[in-house]
Length: 189
Image 1 (cartoon, rainbow, N blue to C red):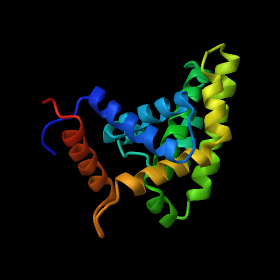
Image 2: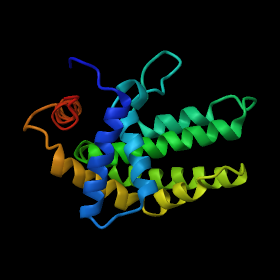
Image 3: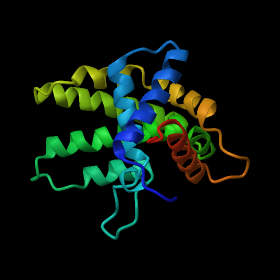
C-alpha cells in the first residue's frame, strides 16, 4: 500500500470522519467520538485488530474464541487487570467489526451476538474500572448503554464515506480508501 500513514494523521482523519458522521446522526458526546476514533486508528493496523492468537500462532477472529482464551489464562498474573484488558479489546473489536464490517458480520449470522457481547464487555470494563478506582468508567458505561447506536453510527459512516466496490475484499478496500482519503485530505502541502 505504499507509504505508511502516521498514527497521528490517521487519528485526525478518523476523528473528522467520526465527528461528521455522528453529528449527522445527532450524536455529540465528544469523549465517545474521540475514543471511537482511537479504536478505528488502532484497528486500522491488522496486527492490532488480530493481536490475540492461539499458542500455535493462529489469529483469533471469533469473539467466542477470544472469550474462551481469556478464561484459560493463568490466575496468578493480575487476573483483574487481564480481564479488564480482554473485555476492553472484545468491546473495541465488536464495535469495530459490527460497525465498519456489519455486512460481513451479518453474513456470518453473529451481529446480535456481537452487539450483545460488545455491550456486556464495555459494561464489565466500567465495573472493573470503578472497582479499581480508575477514571473513565463513565465512558465505558456510555459505550455499553448505547453500544448499538455507536455501532450503527459506524455503519452509517462506512456507507457514507467508505463504500466498497462490488465484489471487492471489504477489508482491503477499506484500508485502500482510508489511505486515499488521507492523502487527499491531509496532504503535507
